[in-house]
Image (cartoon, rainbow over all chains, first blue to last red; front, side, top):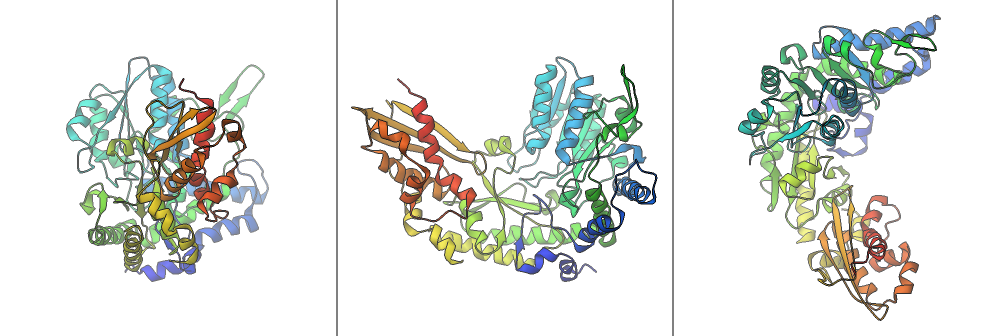
Length: 401
Length: 129
């Protein structure tokens, strides 16, 4: 049974009358995660992969245990394919610098989509500039789904394709399975941004057959600073590291250095051990409840939100209406009221909601709007909060007449 | 909704948002600048017409939140008749006192309110002559 009140009990910050509808920016953290970090500092704190004393061995073991949990969470073949990063953006940069700059050449085609967050857009745009590649962007149709014809046309002849598994504005869930397959048929590498997907939907990299997957722990109950880049082993073996220095080294002489084996080659410097330990606790928490149940809960809330939003005159929903085709958020505009004013007014009712371009400026330009307001949910949100959101939005409408 | 909200969203602010003052372009402007608040998508384009070293006309276009738009309305009204040599003396507090709302605890909204001042500074550096 999915008991939202029981879940809310685990989140100290939600006990303060807060209506938190910005989980797409970052999720709140359950006490199990906070305690795991706390306990690490109180009982196990030391650097990893260095000391031989008990404390250091414990820290290293804990850190590596989370790597195994992560492997299992996304069903990767081997822990060598699990690289810990700070966040999704860092993962994209590892691919850009380590694979893109090494293997792409002048005239090659790089493809992404118009619905991307800047973190899955700017690295590829800049990569194209650096290597002299063509940069093409798949368009959306009127309903906010990727334009299938344009998609097939643009992937043809591509060498690299980057796509999000879930849009952070439209909510759209592109058919990543199809995009990966199409990319491979064209001899292209396919990188998936899972930032908005992995918190509540099962990612199976083996089944999906993506070449890379990048995502952030902080959007799925973990502390800031724990991110993951998955890459197929044969690709990672051939890549150059993004960061050079300690921890990623096998041997160093005055003349040359040799890189450590996977995944350490990509983990230069002291990692965010505390955050990774917390990330392990977050995975345990999600596994215990079950992603399927979380997704079902979210679907019913999103369906309810879409329905209630239709009662508000002048409110325009952005993106697909079919709840099965969208993730955990609804962005919208309200006629006559700037998004910034909406979120400032809702803040007075303790409602945390985001306004702006949500780091997706090309998409907002495509939609012909300067900004939008976004309500995003997670496992701890409930129907009553959506009722309060709707009530507050009605009052905003009233004030702006 | 609490008191502080009513403090910020005064009726005259919302009125200025709906019916801005000095909204429009000056075709033969002597100074013009566009500023953009990337955090929320506010955009203001300020136009200035100068005669006898004095601002003869000030207008703006763009789109943004109620605070930035109301601020631009009041600020363009304030600029008219100001001597060019006095423009560099205009400070943040001068702009905030036009709005008559307290934004000291809202650093993000403060940026919206001060956007027209940014536009003025930029406009003075760019002459269209």
